[in-house]
Length: 157
Image 1 (cartoon, rainbow, N blue to C red):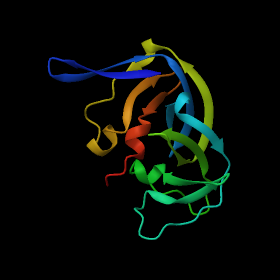
Image 2 (cartoon, helix red, strand yellow):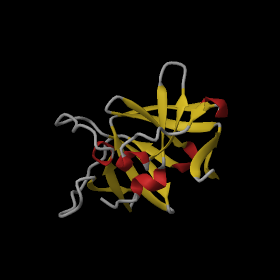
Image 3 (cartoon, rainbow, N blue to C red):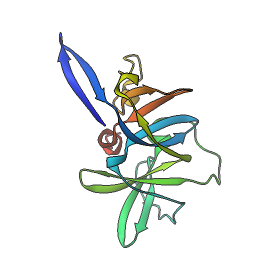
Image 4 (cartoon, one colour):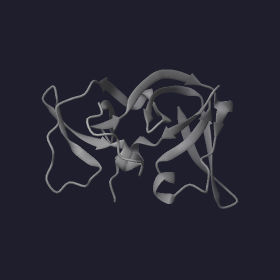
């Protein structure tokens, strides 16, 4: 998948090529990340909380001897909190050559999408979320929001 920003009359315009996406659900919303960014998908892992960490950081996991930060995608996307005791799945992505775990509600499938089903992200999204969404693919029965992995793991809040 290749999503690029271009300038057109002073406005950013996104273009895309089709590709393969690993999909997951967060609060009923379908998200996709380029499979090239995914290191692995894990069942729930033991997690160590980090004192004074931002709410978006759920903790640290030990991934075969490597310490990985786990980000709560509901917190990151400003969505409703999940039910207490809900099982969290981990999608470990690589951003800036560092592994990070995205905590999601449910793991989906790996899907192939065509470039002609891509749409720019809407301009009227909340600015905090807009920077995280690279675009939208129209699937047969729903929309898939393309998550910008690098922007998602950049914690500025």
